[in-house]
Length: 306
Image 1 (cartoon, rainbow, N blue to C red):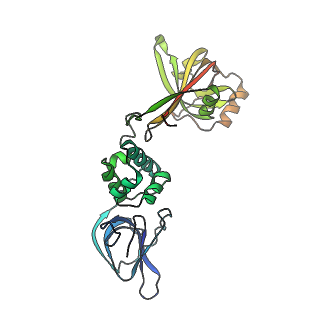
Image 2 (tube, rainbow, N blue to C red):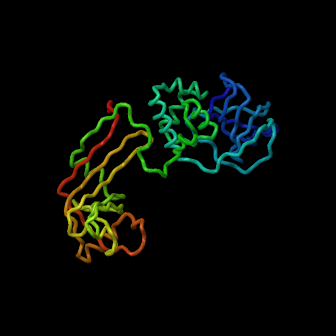
């Protein structure tokens, strides 16, 4: 019996041949893929060291097929279960884990083949994990972290509550100026941006707002007594950006122009009906402000070879 990480171990009934239990092979103890295996059972989500018996076989999933859905918990049998460990309840975004693995591998100048060898998995399986969202098991993440000389916490995105930009910078970054057309495209139709205004006393203040793009205008709603309301009838700066922490890339767009209150009641009702979201800050925010940019600029950070 030989297996790869990601294959499925199936325990069959000796009398009917039907599967009694199955799980994903998440750990190998021999480079040639022979038993024993670390298996995460689909019915309990526990990881167990398994020495397969004669009623067990390996189902090769091609390192890309999803595992079967958890079934009702059956009785255990046909294999020795040793050293059980419950899987963590919290799961990070699997797509981001794969991208962090790829980014760290490239940062260290490692090939997929070398990284896969260190992690005791096939290069095809590693390619699948890096390129497509996959439900990585704790054992797989541990092996990848060890292979890359990093930590599980780093691969799972520890520090995501901190301000972005604390990761490694690109080895060879390139800063691109964006034209007005691409800036408008990145602004898209809605999202969260930051508006810079002069508050009482003339102090500059930057506050986040939920915004929409309607025609050539950037619009947002707020309360008449809010800091953002100070933007009305003034020249303001409005900024939107995106930071890809896993890939150390990103872009920013800056719009500058006059802001004014939307005074037409019907226009305000139309904006409220068509808005993609309500203000995250909550509360009564019925005052719509429109910014009509006279200047639209942006920049993007990418690898030098792009």
